[in-house]
Every structure is written in structure tokens, then in C-alpha cells.
Length: 613
Image 1 (spheres, rainbow, N blue to C red):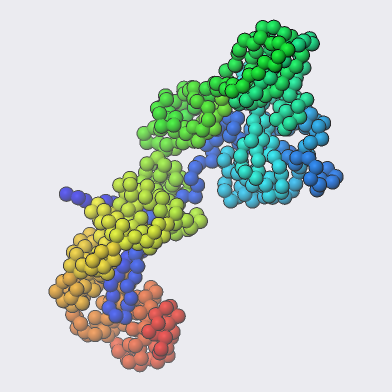
Image 2: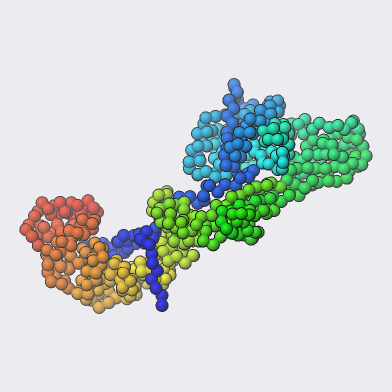
């Protein structure tokens, strides 16, 4: 036997929400979506990767614009530092070493603008704070004020007293990463290592920018007749060593090298060294098509529960706990990390890992029961966490908030996605609300047939509100043929299940003899039941029967009382009917002033028939 599910007050929140059938003086209402509350954020911003490419803080270096900066000479660049607060400050303090090398060539101008800061702040308020959104806002702001390149300096510890320093160059007009280079540098602190390594980054940047003299580094090799040309290295630039002596960066051409056999090494942090034997002579030795193999990234994952499963790109890779972190070797590039534990929310984070990088991820899993309580109380962020962890009522709640603009911006597309998730997860309320969107054409193309099937699924699962809505579609012939008998059966099922609006609708069918034998006395009984459940549309219908003496004896005073209650609750047809009773002295003395006021109220409330009085 199928039992009706228990729904929370918030989850089935539509008060008197439902299509209702009325006599001539009262038009049919409309179905309303049901839900609890919803979500504001689609991710928890406290879950941050403490790694090279995902920054927790971005500091802007505001460089005063040089006199005459309005002209077009030179590339306009904007310099930023990413990483933790401490690391970003250390990089900023060492930045003069980078700027001085770059500025010597006279090709670059460091730009600074209050407008940049304003655009960035405005963007962050719109898209939220996160690694991806920070990059989006930086590029949007740079493009707005005609910055040619956004230069980002960052660092991470690679060993004891050793750091990897990275430069990334972004093109604001295309939002693309156009160049990146990592150099190794030693120092007791990041500040010291940055002072030593920044000139190398600057030289690599200038070499990439076309300054040939910047490509060759200092060499202890004497003059010779050997010639070497290195073309097409991926990734590039790379450091070139000949028999252990550094020559400079490649792609590049090297002259005056010692002739004879030698060992050539191409190095780039995060990649396996490329080693090859060469025999140099006066005839240029050319190497091309070289691809360095990336080293795996090492990802350490810490979690706050007794035991959790770690999944990387859909593959279970290990476990973590409060006492033991998971240490994994992962292919560099884009990865999706999920941490799962029964009874807790699923933690997920998308990362961009550099070759050979060591990164730490802290997975903060939330107790699902606590998330559900917070969602019920109206916390949108907790609703999303609960939804992500597989709690389908929270997905429904989330969709309800978006479909109604309740605590979040109105967004039918997001509501549709969330209702679909909930419905696919066997949430009857999710299917009901999804049917409503299909019926109204909100967030999806209008599709009454699809709405019917979804209402049917929710009704079959015991959701009485869905049975009533399906009955209304059958009665009106929406999404299929008209079927009053089928509608009556569905209304009865829902009415017996406690759905007051279904009792009202079934009463209308009995009054009109649609799908059932006409029985106004039975209609009165059903209206009474629905009115007793505080559905004022049914109270208005019952008042009409008492006023006309249909199925019950004439009782003007009772009719007046019922009309008054319905009118006070916003049923404008009831206000108009009550006005007639005052005008015609039914149930009391004639009162034309009261009648005029009631006609006006009904007219102002949208009941057109009252406007002619």
C-alpha cells in the first residue's frame, strides 16, 4: 500500500494554492509552486585551495601612471600578486627587482587606475568571490580601461628554502592565458627567493616579448665555433644547459659554443628534464619538436570527519580523515575533487593544478542534518550544500527560492535545473514544481503534456496537491483530451487525502453535473468541508448556495457572514456579492453606501463585473 509522504510546512508552502472551480461569480484560480526555501550560492566560498593557481587574496599594485601615459607607446600592463595575504605582501616587497628589469627595455608601462579598482569591485559584487570569479573580474576591469596585459606573480614552496615563482600573462581582450613561466629560486624566505628569482622571470617575459638579448643568460663557456638552434619547445621558454652550464632560455639560437660532443639539458620546473647528446660544429645543430613531460602534481587533502572517500575526476583515489590526510599524485591540469562521507555533505572543488606542484586542499564536510535545519530556516547557502549532498527536499527548496525570488534573485532557469535534480532524485514536490514550470513556460518551453506526466508521477507518489492539479488539467483539456470523469476521480482522491482545494473543485463538478451526476446537496457538503479548512474561495461558493437556496435552505445571514470572510481574505467576487446583498436588503437592512464601497473594492481588486455599479 502506498502511503502519503509527510511534507514540512515550508515544503508545501502554497497557501490556498491551486486551481479551484467556482460558480459564475468567481473565476478559476491557478496552481502555485510549492517549496521550502532556497539557495543563494552554488558553492561554499570558504572551501579554498591553498595552492599556486587558486588564490585566497589578490593584491593590486597601483603604479602611478607616467606623464604622457595617454599615448600609445609601449605595452600597458597591470601587475597583480596572488596567494595568501603573507605571500602576496612578500612578492609585492620584492617586485621592484621585476619591474626594474622590465622597464630597462622601454617597451612596457605599468598602469594604475582608480577606475580599475572600481570596475573590479563592482564585478566581484555581481559574480561573487572565488578563484574563477576573481580572474573574470580582473580581466573585465583590465579590458575596460585598455590594459594590454595582466601580469600575475605568484609563488609556492617547493622544498626546504626553495620556492617556485610563477609569472602568468593574461590577455584581457580575449580572457586567455597567453604566457606562463615558472623558475626555481632558493632563499630562507619567500621575500629573499623572490628577489633572486624575479629578474629571471622578467628576462623570460622580455624574451617572450621579442627582446632577443634577454634570452641569453650568463655563461662561463669560452668562445668557440659551435652553433646551436632550439626551435618549437613545448612548453616554453625552457632553461638550456650545456654540460651543466646554463646558456639561457629557449627557443633561441646560441653561437660561439665549444665544438664537439656535449650533453644538452632543457629544464622547466614541474617537468622532467629533457636530456640529449649533441655534437656541435660550425654547421648549426637544430633541435625542434621537443615536448617536455609534465611531472604529476602532488595533492594533499585534509578532511574534518572520521573517514571520507576521495574521488578525483570520478575515480576513487583514496581516503582522508581528521588524523590522516590523503596524499595523491594527480595529473596536472583541470581536476574535480570530491570528498564523500555518509551523513555529511559532499565537498567538491574544481582545481587547476600545475605540473609538479604541491597543493593542499582542506575539505570541510557539513553534517547533513544540520544543513537541513539551516535550509528549513531559510539559509540559501546551506540549502545548496544539502542539495549537493543528495537531500532532494533541499533541492526543491532551492528551486522554490529562485522561482519566487525569495532571498535570491528571481531565476527560472536555475529553478528549472534544481527542480529537475529533485524530481530525478524521486522528490514528489520537485516533480510537482517542475510540472508547474512546464505548464507556465517558465525556464522551459511551455509543454502541457509534459506537465501532465509530471503531475501524474507526483500524484502516484502520494502528493495530493499534484492529484488536484492533474485533475484540473483533465477538466480543462490541457495537455490532452478533456476528461471530467477522470478529473472528478482525482479530485475525490485528493479531497479524501486532505487537499481542501480539491474538495472545492469536486463540489463545482457536482453543482454543474460535470463527470458526475448533478447533486447540489453534495456540492454544499464539499464546499462546507473546504471552507472549514479555511479555503475562502470555497466559502464564497457556499455563500452563493445559501443566498440562492440551492442544495441548502435560504439563509441570508449565513451567506452574508461567509461573503464577508471571503471578501476580507481578498476574494473580490465575494465583495461584489456582498454588495448586492446590502443593496437588495438581503439578510439585513438596505445600505447603499456600504454597497458602493464594496463594489468599488471589488472593481479596484480586478473583479470587472463590479465596475458597472
